[in-house]
Length: 193
Image (cartoon, rainbow, N blue to C red; front, side, top):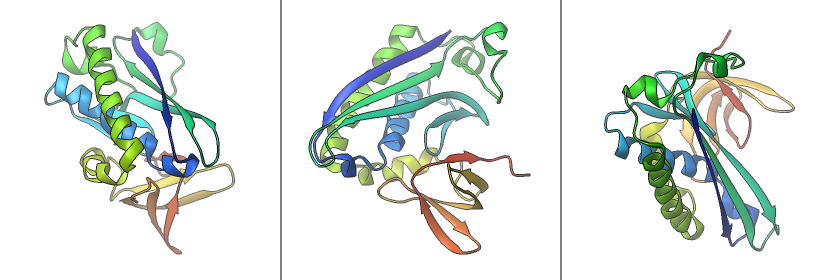
């Protein structure tokens, strides 16, 4: 029904070197899926969702352990809906889709896992040296929120504004009534009341 995979990858430079990692992972996964299924209209919703036609296809989770300025063990988790049943989807409170619905006949689980793993390992190798900045242009090609009115909820605030892309360290740039804010965490909602 679903594809789940995780990779543990050590990165030097401490937590400060990891800005934009979830966006870079999103690019790597989207690249893998579109290379397997040309024409798949996959896009990214900052910071960690993969969408097709406004419905969630999958997501990214990053866990970190390590030293503030030394080596950080990064665990990248990816989940992609493959061929979900109605019973499995009963508890989902948002629009969703799966590869079977959008392609008719998706590639095999092994093909998906292999392509995603190869793409992630290549990206992580480059990211550990260059960071997110070289991936910005590719991210912009998948960005589904840029130019749209969004609401960003974090632990201590709710901000509404127009998404103005991302910064070289992966922050969401949000044009608000008080100027442009750079946000490093939060949940983006495209459904504004």
